[in-house]
Length: 248
Image (cartoon, rainbow, N blue to C red):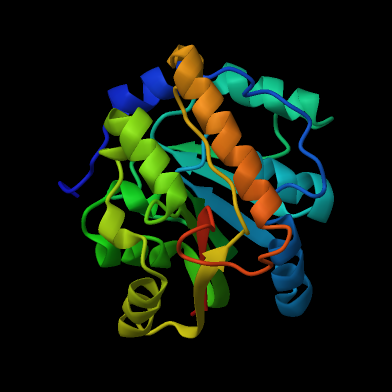
């Protein structure tokens, strides 16, 4: 697929520069409650996380749901994966790992749950990248995709203080109605697409920002948290994420 807004060198540099990658994943990890409901409802036993290095959700689902999980990405740093597994009291062989290109790899098995988190917004052909998830999905299985919402305050912060990172995202993909429509065009059922979370924001390069920028972003974050104690609903302006769910 030639509409990729990133490449292998970008992700290698991105992950190798990250601080705080290795941590104990808590049961209340974001989206965990939604996943638990899907698993309980569908009786899912197997899952694959696409483009998910270092495998937070493959590890989460193994740790808390005892699922048979797999991580697929075209950049894998095995040492970091092993550190993350150990931090979460798991062994090196507790999750399967496939280092491969999502767009050329032919899956040997299909899964009850196919997941990606922050993947599809890095491609300009949104429908095509969603379709690339489907060969991994069993009939009756559940597709679960999340992506950031950069069409509200969080996106303004990204554009203002980290334009390079902002430009690695295809902003037009961040449209719940459009995502749902693509899923229906692809023949998926039980489609749900919505904003998730009341308010949050982040900067990937926060450590390199000026003192003024850090103070401004921290103040904005605190103000947003206070406001959303009273505005208790998800919205395009405030919510940091979009969730897409569908069944095959």
